[in-house]
Length: 234
Image (cartoon, rainbow, N blue to C red; front, side):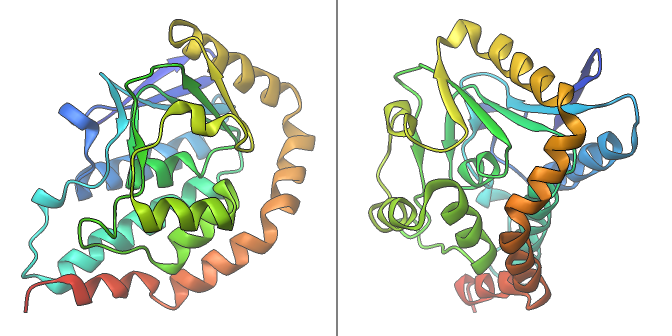
């Protein structure tokens, strides 16, 4: 479930899917709808995406997917790819307040933001465990992670699948770590700063991301998510 809340000209979207905030296909569809609505609503000038409880998002809810339904399984990741592309190309400021664990699909979502605010919660875990649990990453996902983390860090995190802490984000682009009880305040402050420079920011964002966006679009057009078909039970 995605819970929208309006705070002046900022729309806050909260992932509220139970413990861990694991994403189901319904959640992906709901988040796409909320972003689309925020895009079209002229009173919304920025979006802050966050989670509830102790997790931002701990990944896809694999238990909600049928491993014997190869097309349905791949379609869930098609929906995830579509959401990631929509968030990455969202032409209003998108700030993510990472309120806790950010794992797998959660870290992919985090990678779409214009700016990420993380609370200094020492128990929060950040990882890309896909290879460890028998999944993979498609071309669009790799492009997104390379953009956010750099290729070197992305490969290291994917290949070892180990948990990282908030300390590992101190030198990641457009990411800041603040006291947990001030994280929302900081996220809203950054959103308002981006709103104040909205016209220039939008042009800069388009130019800065243009190359990656074209590669991501090509990956989607080539059905990169079909790689997940091979992981289903025959």
